[in-house]
Length: 533
Image (cartoon, rainbow, N blue to C red; front, side, top):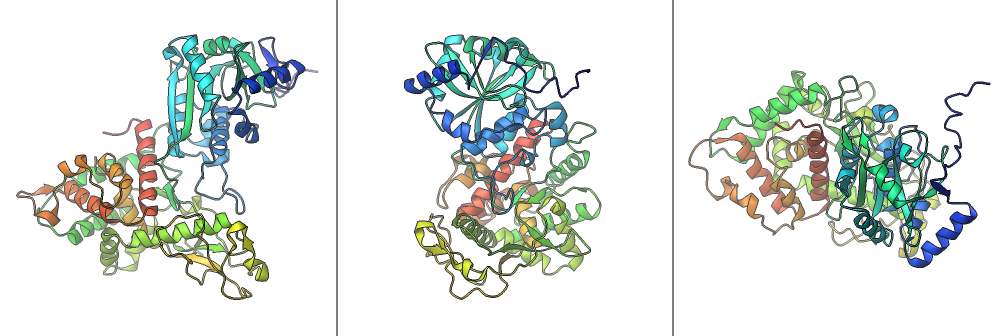
């Protein structure tokens, strides 16, 4: 019988270059490495060890293992109530349809890592100083739980079938100079020990797609980055499937918007007029078909009005059997809405839309890729007495959406935050938030990477407290609140002034975190595709 393509990959015998982790020798190596302290990274990784879903998903799966091992919150629901990373969620930087067949390279891996809350440091194989230097890096990382070491290498050098591959390193044996490779293609090869020098040679090989050598990436949690709670870059803000480049629609919009922001306006124009001009021009561009793909997706399930999937009604979270983690998410979302609605930008957009027709509001809703959001959630019968179950050691209870959070400070993110149930929960109930056009337009004005408005000092403004100052921002600032400019000024300068002023006065942290995470994601995706002018 002729061998099929599947037979060529099914449980291939390890070549002599590798030692099966589950063999007697492999177990002995593990015990010795554990005793020496170089298996600390193993336990969290092995708890998240998974088999890649697609033949070319090794890089995607390695990153999913790292994200879950480092306990990064994806900011959206995977299935049911679970917030958990899966390959299907890593849909920026390069489309999953392309990754399924072509895989990803180190540059794309870095983009994905940064877009999902990780700090990533890559070292090209050609830049590995020496075997001893690499050895020290491996020894350092394998003694820690907060860093994941992922290698990009050629299987050919190890005598294995195939070529380019990604996998995490989960341990090191100092006496024999062996590293443990958690091969994500478990249908092909089991976890195995290999010589570090041989792995280094495999990392020095050239990736035919990029023309550069492979290498390794060390990822850890980006301490100053918060995962978006509600808004995230649209799945369309990636690459065009046919052209293999950033969507021409997005590029066209990006360039026209930036060009328009260089318009000269009177230096003493009040903030209301500036925001009104920006909002009106944005709606005009959308109405003219300039931006056919919305810049945002929604991370939470919104109900969509029947007959028109672009009309958002409200976010609905059923109270059925909520656990503490879900209650904390609801509190965070509520705080995000409160903080966002307290900004001058939001109120100015709201004031402008209040004088406009309903069609203008409907145009704004087109900025959200509703079809990319989770399915609409219909009201479900409350879980009655079970709705009032205790939530862990805090002795708190989940509540139906008719109640306010029982906390003293709405901006608090304490682990004790929860909702108290004050009635018998025997009626249909759910948590409900309205996402209105002014929310979407305000978020766009804050995060869209037009010119240098917020990509540079804007991020710094998000990081600081309400009273913090940023020298880089202040040097470039021409504040209408501190005296108008003497000459006419490009609209971009006036808008930057207004937005930075708003950021400095936000008391809470949820909105700042949302803005910062979105700015990083937008910037990384566009920078990756070399489309910044």
